[in-house]
Image 1 (cartoon, rainbow, N blue to C red):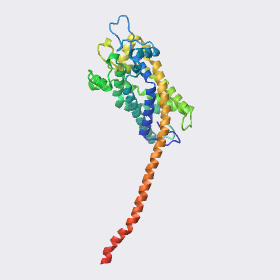
Image 2: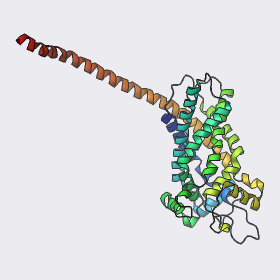
Image 3: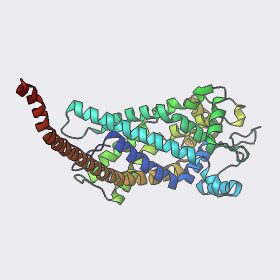
Image 4: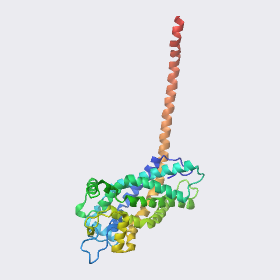
Length: 347
């Protein structure tokens, strides 16, 4: 994010590290909600005429609480943390890439345009979308593997590498690691809306404040995420369907496009099913985004202090080196002059 008035600017990697740290901490805290929303989004209601299950898991969940209870009964408490390693790696890499490119793109735009004030909402959304698109290209394989891990049946749990090999050994080959890329590129509007709304709400509600209080950052992050989630939920559901194993009813045939996933869901469950899992999705989004922005604000302050300390140490070393060089020059200079004068005296 752009530096605030009165706060020394962080380099792109500093903003990226602050954002990634906040995202990892926030997602680790609410990870069980991530499992639940993924399971709810991939399941399809069964009809009496269905010959095979329509989902990769025979257990049917009726709500967030029901899903948590059944997962714990079937897989234990650890079942709520299936795939957490891959998920946190994905969260760290995605957010690092997003905040890095967002800072770079936004700084370049403001510098090139010589803007006297922050960019408009439309420009903020465009810059966020551009940064999100660049980030997704590099990080989507981790997302594919994590989604597979989260939806694996109890007796078929695999680690990150084995799950990755399973994806590669499917009919898609290595390109399977980029399944859902088109949907993900469309979904860059989600973080774009989130951070665009965050900037606008901050300017409207807390204009002129250099540093926000923790609850202020949490509120802004939560409110902006709710708006983004409601607007993009059908695409989120479609992306999960693309990245998970194909339902048994499709006899191993994977979905090719997110439009195909959405058509399948509407055919079997109706249009409103495109919003399934929205309760844990929004709950997770509120907590994660609120905690992320609250943590990121604090991390930015810590990094500013750390960078200032590192610069002071560097400047001190340079000053000492310069003084040592000057002192040595004073000692050596008379000797050098004498050596140069000796041949002339001898003549």
